[in-house]
Image 1 (cartoon, chains in turn yellow, brown):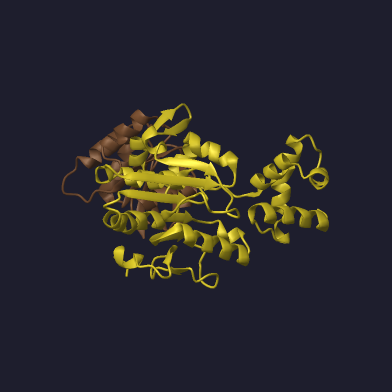
Image 2 (image 1 turned 30 degrees about the vertical axis):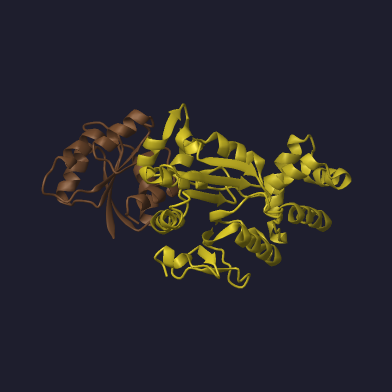
Length: 280
Length: 121
């Protein structure tokens, strides 16, 4: 691939999704975009780049961006963020939100839905407790293709075995041929919509908990800072933010601070969430 | 090191499971059917049994019922690993005392996820 073509694609991706592409990722461009070029009736990746340069056709730009974003996901991925949710975040919220009985959770990189559905399942496991509550889980992703799959709530045999305990499969899924369909009880707890983390956060409302895992790693430092600081503004003062295991706020922003001893868990720097959660 | 008894009439499956589980730091014993597995348990009770369903002599479900009916022995964790992938088989296995259930084909990630869920890792 020609250097100027690489730079053109890298620029396009940075601008549209914040994705930082380093020259060592040329193979990723080639392996993911060549099939897309063929689908569009173009012989080579070069031809695809040519077309993009000439027209900047919106639909094609969108397809390129979607093809380059990573959408790997599984149920209860990494376990810890879900154990912390169940054992610390929910009990604290039950107390602090007990009067208003309202809880809003945002999965900011929902991908194919496993993360928001895992949270919905944890709430459902103790459903008596949440009777009369208005609970909303919002799943967003830049990629509309994965959101279609998320909304459908249909998973392959492989997908339901990565992280989902068998008891939960029995309880919350039905089998339809080769695939597994998540129940309407769970599905109705989550709403999905396309959202670009580089865009304005107004209109999302405010949240009590935000999961934004394994997204920031693809952004450069100023973009990370910007996204984190916007998240602070839509998160309740006693809210919680979960990042991926390889991500941190340290050295990027002082809007959040890590919860000591709890990997991946962050709270607003001026907040008091740790005491509420018994982690202070 | 925890001991895992791999029970499957297919030599190939036993070999694949052994390779994955050894990488995950388990000590492995093998059995070719349910009866062979019961004998192995009598000699040396494993921490976990990875259990196929359809086997000659004694199938996996019979083995499970037999081992669960034994009193006064340390019960192993039992993880089914079978091509039977319908809900009724899964329910039957769990009701008979299986701790987890893997639908073949499986890979390292699935074994790792399931073994983590039952607290083996």
